[in-house]
Amino acid sequence: MSKFTSYYQSPLGMLEIEATETALVAVKFMEEEIVCYVAEKKGSDLIDRTKLQLTEYFESKRKQFDLPLEFAGTEFQQQVWQELTHIQFGQTMSYGRFSELLGSKQLVRAAGTAIGRNPIGIIVPCHRIIGSQGDLVGYGGGLWRKQWLLEHEGCQKLLPW
Image (cartoon, rainbow, N blue to C red; front, side, top):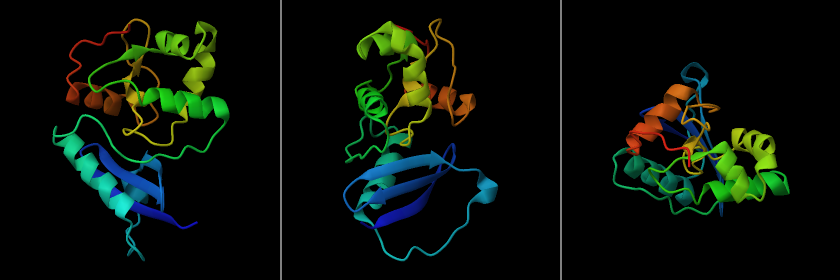
């Protein structure tokens, strides 16, 4: 199966987007200095749709993504990443509450680890998971990006429900 890679300049820095012919598999923040621009050999309609939807999101014209996703990970990781897609635009949830949705508050560490390995940033909104006191913790793209995304979504006050 063919895999396509492209880059997207977001307000938060460069994103690397990876997709197969049928599903989005990764959206990752890149370090500016390591991005190498190369001519893309073959276009991908799915990558083009992803870029369009990201643009609409950053322009506050989109609150929900509509893209086919494919998760490569353990069964538990896939469950966590799928559950993250149900947290609505502008909403936050604590790690503890999120682990309860998975079945047990005892899963908080395992859930946190899986959230930290989310391969499809922004689209799968792991930035909406916050600390139990409403604090910003644990975001692979950097806490400043997490704060920016939450403010962009209108989360003036972080609610850890």
